Image (tube, rainbow, N blue to C red; front, side, top):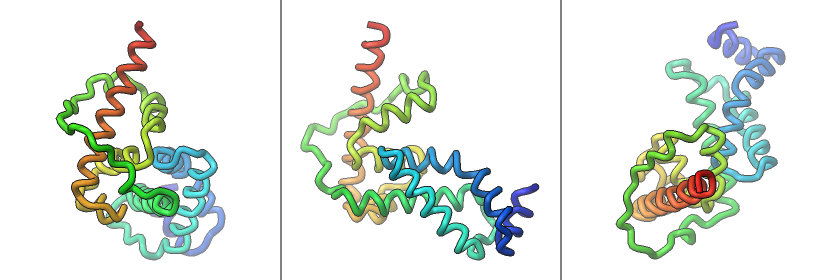
Amino acid sequence: MTEQKLIAAVKKGQRKAQKLLYDRYSPQMFGVAKRYVKITEDAEDVLISAFFKAMTNIAQFSGKGSFEGWIRRIVVNESLMLLRKRHNFNLTVESENFDVQTDMTVEEDLAAQDLLKYLEKLPHGYRTVFNLYVLEGYKHREIAEHLGISINTSKSQLILAKKRLKDILEKANYQRYG
């Protein structure tokens, strides 16, 4: 069944279509949620909440963009709402020298699962800003608005996230290749 037909069936309230849509997109969207929240149960909660919102507001999906992009934005927003409830992003900024090289050639050699494992080691604020900027393509202004932080805080957390991730990757490579 094509995506357009599937969405049309969901808009008509067909339960089978809802299940098919969930089955088609939930594995990938779970991965998106897991990039933001470390705890698997929290990522599952985000996924369920996001799909509930998507299904109840499916009429708002105009079909102009991809459904995957639309549901991804919902999952990211649900993840951010959970993180905002639990964490103060203004407290994760460290005062350090921000003169950091950001080329991460090691990242190119890692599989997606390895990268996720390393991203989970970052503090919540770093990981969230890194995900939004690098993986989702948000601008610092958008990140600041979503998280209720300043643009400079967003920028500094990205720099610190890259530095911390680089350190984590170098340590992993040292342990791997000694």
